[in-house]
Image 1 (cartoon, rainbow, N blue to C red):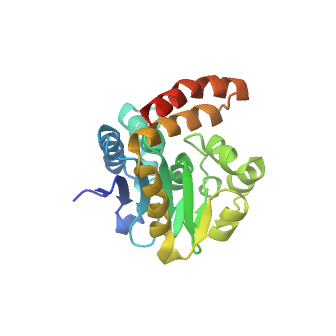
Image 2: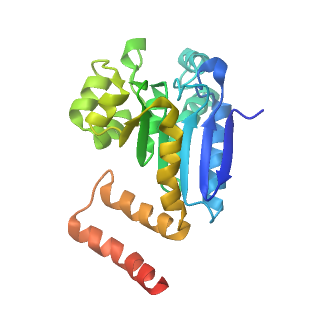
Image 3: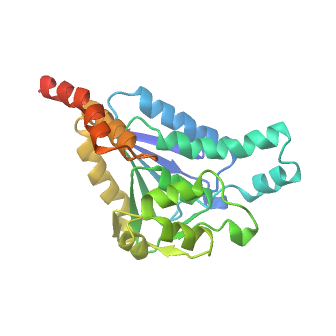
Amino acid sequence: MAEVQLDVKDGVAVVTLNAPTRRNALTPQMAQELIVCAETIDADPSVGAAIVTGANGQFCAGGERATLARVGEDPAEDSRFRDLGSVYEAFMRFGRCAVPTIAAVNGAAVGAGVNLLLATDLRIVGESARIIAGFLTIGLHPGGGHYVLMGRTAGREAAAAAGLFGEEISGPKAEQIGLAWRCVADNQVLATARELALRAASDPELSRMSVESMRLELGPPGVSWEAAMHAERAKQMWSLRRR
């Protein structure tokens, strides 16, 4: 059975990590399944938004420890280098989906799991959510562009606190510092994310156009206001004519 499940309803794709014995930690195979889900979403023009979440009250415990240990034995060996790279590729690929993306976060997000939620366009977190970079605490340098992802979302202070000093970020704290849009009761996380996603999904074509512009303008790196206006103009003209 696939450990990454895809369900599409009313133009909203819900991608669920479902590896309960590992608290949804990513293996290379699981990473490939996540990439396939992203490609499937992009290929379906009826999809206007996507949500990534974790099953069994957990978001994602990062990269599978056995994979990390195997890579550590010989990091330059080709297959091991590619195995770790596939985990990076998975959250990068989901972050580049052609539609707006939301992370619906219950329970713990650790390491690469934090990178996955940061790769999305928006985050809804539960009151019991625990966001833990955790790299340095296990003697590992952060990977996957973690500081860029954290810094562009919550700023330098949060990137330093979590990534350098091991600070854990709760659900309420995530909302307070701008790491998440909303913190809600745990049993409302997915419903809240879906409510937002349905708005974008009501017009998938416009949604895809708009998110492309937002990412281009905000980066990283960001662009100037003038460049943003030029970048937006053709798409805005398209939307006006379409009306």
